Image (cartoon, rainbow, N blue to C red; front, side):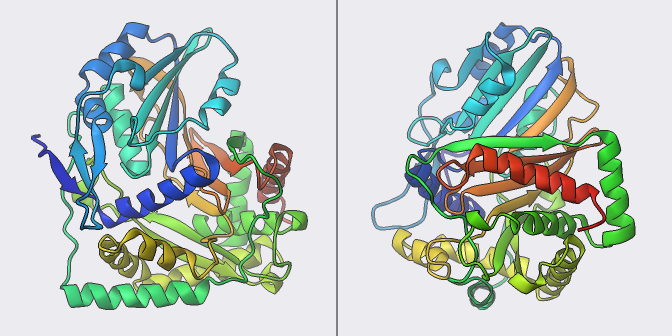
Length: 424
């Protein structure tokens, strides 16, 4: 597929770019998403050198830079000069894999240097491929497409494809205003947020993984007791669990407010690498509604249905589309003003299962795939639920100036415990 030299960021790309600037300013690490594939066996090092030197998708992504004319707020992608191998690839042959992965969580991917990076971590009998990419490039599905390309199973992947935003300008404007009013009404200065307790912010990582038996147990509870969709159930669990850590949070009787990304990628774009196809659903729960996981999940389930009926995700996409034409300072004001700089109590995502389950990656069987969320601070806490081969994973990226590693471990333990208990 022939790609022209410049093309415009989508509304969702521009949204991720805004948070890239915010995150880098506050933690030193931009809005970077990461994925790690672990395979059984050793992939020869020369295979990775060939990958970054010859792979069309890696070359395309690594050579993208951001440009805009001085008189225009609209950002565009531009294909620039080829990056050197050392700007894209690092090989780690010694050290504990988990310790290396934790260090890599703070690796940045800026457009001034290179927006994508690959780290290879060798164990005694396994190879871990760790990919970091600026979120403005693509979403979770885009990262999955990139993994498919690297794995060698990518015959139908397209690098870039334009998605038309349907409707007249007046319709987009009407929808955008409705979305802005809806969000402003739900958020506000009374939302609970993580307190900033110390200086030296740093992006960090924590996670837990349930056994297959524990995952089945929480699934049975979901179906027979909670009786909502998975998203309200998992999000309700996190809110209920976090509410028990009063010392971490502002506004003791304030509201929890969480914007959850949802995939709006049409079937015709399922195989497209570049770009974000996201919108959001907004969840709010009052202090006195947090009686149990089931109660909070029920509140969120009703809100999810109501927003679907009101077409809020579609309207928010119109808002993002029009936001592309706003100068940076106005864009920032729209997003930060309702919550006084805090857009969320915390960030949350529920990811679909990886397409690499029961597959080969560069010729070797896939042992595990994990997707790691970015750290945007504020709010300074991002929690992801995902499953791989029947095991539920709860992954937490966080800002150590707002929540310590010990506190994160305690929170993750509480989330896991509350998933399995019928008493909360």
